Amino acid sequence: MTLLSAALLLFLVMDPLGNIPLYLTALKNVPAERRWKVIARELLIALLIMVAFLFGGQYFLSALQISEPALTATGGVVLFLIAIKMIFPPIGAEANIQNHDEPFIVPLAIPYVAGPSSLATLILIMNSEPTRWPEWLAALLAAWFVTGVILLAASPLAKLLRNRGLIAIERLMGMILVALAIQMLMNGIAQFLATLPS
Picture 1: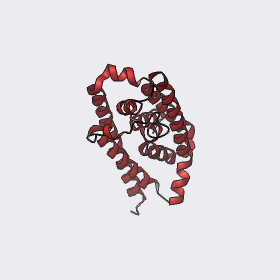
Picture 2: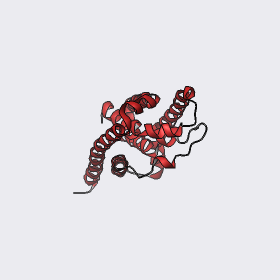
Picture 3: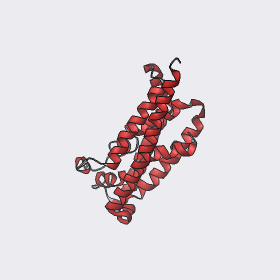
Picture 4: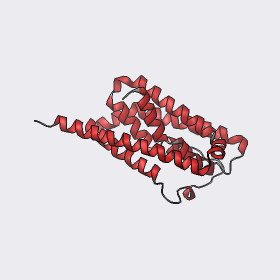
């Protein structure tokens, strides 16, 4: 995996365009002049959590004695399920969001940006080649930065793209993620078969 492909994978998993309607709904009761400050704060919290998982996740996996082929295959399955939800979102997903005066950590930082899928992907990437951690950190920062720019511009983007445009882009991203997930699953199976005695 290259730095670019890792950054693209993380960006797709964070799904900022798909999160625009969710962010706008969660920030409905927050004054317009304060929204960007709240979003910036939540993005920083999400980044800290993701960096912690990037560097600490592999020790957790070592303690559980999970093999690399199993982790790769599992990552493929998880990404596939995420991609399916992006292509076929559950009905009424936005209706379940609770509107608080000002969201803190939940749901903007977790799970919208630093969700289970993002954290699992970070662990998977780091576990594949731990010595390349500077590249993985750079990929995370790049994906997070682009995600942050999109979410900070959520209101104008929602007006520009409208609901249909956002849905179309999210489903296209879901299709790309399906291909990546299948490739990851195939890699995991191939790694497992290579470990079997001939």
